[in-house]
Length: 443
Image: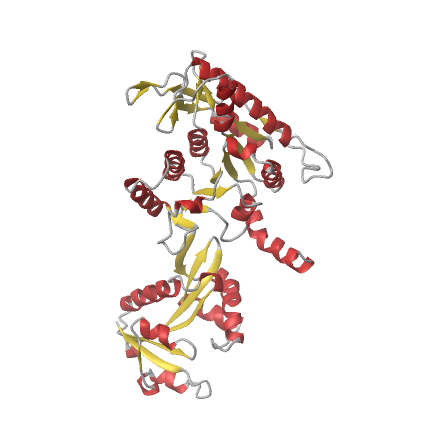
């Protein structure tokens, strides 16, 4: 990367660095991630998040490590669906596998060699008997013995660790008041912790790209889904039998976290180098995200704070002659007539509605969509909002002037018209050199 590209990337990440500072993120990764030869890269990225001021809770799984421990002792794994049956012999393997893996993770988080990205990180990791569990009991006629589920979590102790600028590390085991140890699903632990802490984000690092599920192919925005839409698609895929048992369990945890108050749940693949940073510090990320906060992407009336974003959006189109140039002063005066579509705090589309009440007409103007979001229905969404606003004002006809996009307007119900069909105030300022095409739509 050359210097200019590096500076641009750093500036692009700055809004997310500000937004994420001091926030609580729960990051869950399976034992498969720890087996990867590039596992250190994930640890490096976690260390970078910590250095950027993110408060981190890590939850690790250990499925392949448990399988290996069982095989070493000549034992066969027992499952009912995707839920392991943990008898006393299997529990000894769980304790050995989880304990060894936890120490490996702590060792990697303790790295401080100056020649690595961990140089100077000085991470402090804490853990404890924070998860109280109870037995799953008999499911489908099978006693799961020492397989458990989360009963409660000591959130106060975790908050104290985070307040001390430490990383909280949880393993997929829980303890009972009677002194028993239970084998837990890492996803359920992560979901319970994120929900109870009201974490800002819950992030699952998967062994494969979540795009393989094709969960959102028909949404037009496969990377980000409102929680309600994600639940509908999940139910649809379940009914069609299109998901493996392990995937179903993980998605169920992700959706449960969203329902219980976690604003955003992210699923990313471990294969892509820097996936964690790409997902958190770029506008569109690289994985699948479920969001329950309605403001992630919203259409609303513009405010004076949006002037800079609108100017950045329309300037390239003004330079190309697509839009009539507007000064900042003019835009500030007209800002009340603009609607904006905002995605994660960035203006990605805008449009204006200028009413002519005496003629019962209004102009739909200054339509602009960021290049990354064109051909995705966003301009149509702004038009629909403008039409609704116009009807409330008693407007009967919407008109537009365009030099580059007449077919788009025609496809959305406008018909060619004459200059004389415009309100007289608009006729007086019509630019005959520009020769804009006049289009009108009856509401």
